[in-house]
Length: 478
Ligand code: BGP
Image (cartoon, rainbow, N blue to C red):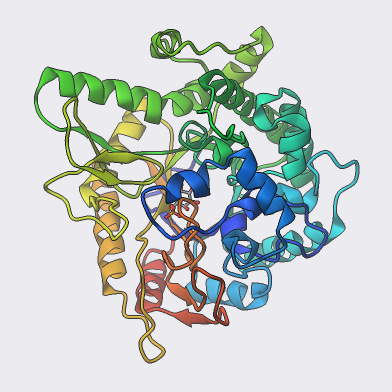
């Protein structure tokens, strides 16, 4: 399927809602990310900025205020498109991962006709990147749905979502199939469990928790949509199709059997489940017990199971930022991507509490490859940091060290026999953070001069890491 490559493609990523801004330009429809407010980081920020309730959604829809809703500005990628494309080419990326906003092509999600302003915008990006000899890794959906799709249909809880999504996917194949090398139907599909608003478009009742049957029914419809997108795509385009989960690299806190049992079980449900369905083509048996014990009831058609079995992913990808710890007893906690986890006494953490663990990337690569025996793509890795602009410079040696240490572990994993086909650095140009809506949580090798409240000229400034990554890309060119 893949020519055995001794090297790995290196690249960088953005995501439409975190990057583009111009939320009401070019006839784009209002989308779920446009409604997420910025709330200064505190213990409740995650809930109110990520698990949006009806009240928060209604208030946001009434507000034309841009700066209180960071994704309405993103990092102004739409406005700075030409400059950013030049920077990506100057870097010499082997592969550029980005996402298309469904609401720019079909503003309401169910429109009869496509929005030509949206086509024009993505056409420019895709052809410019392709013609520069940079491979394209397209995230077909990255936590972002037309709000009409949520309000009129109920988001992914409604089986109708599969047909609507397939129509969008078919249009993408027709318009750009000849330019795209890698397709990812859904970003971090397991995020639907941790962040149902972002992942599966479920608006939380104001004073109730999410209903788990709704969450897993929505995930099931996304599984079916992903398989149908692959089935259709194989007939229409030449690119490879992947699946993706956020990987957490769990460690048991001790050698106590109870800690290890919890480690095995947490890893199954929160990390392997979605990848098992999309890469192996069927529901794993361990989920039956989880569904029974959590009173989860979902409708699964026989045709769904046939489609899943016949249309599995060509490659498996994952995001990796930090490792996690599992304990059955009370321990000090810390934050991580999508999850809160037990603090690991052996690791340093970022300002956001994410535990920095390069060896965890090698462990994850080995486990993912052993489990699926398919080519493995690291579709996200990077360091979120509050970079400071000093006399027009950003000295981010800490980011160079983070990236260097993680890339060294990729080389070790390749020596371990893992078929690694790509590494994509997250947030190649500073973007708004998905978890906490912060512009000042920066990942890029390019600084964007904006702050959490939308102030600044959003000028692009190369960080020290820009030259470092540019040299690595040159050295490792395949
Ligand atoms: C993942 C998302 C990315 C990115 C990343 C970093 O869940 O796929 O969109 O945002 O998390 O998280 P954050 O932006 O919250 O720092």
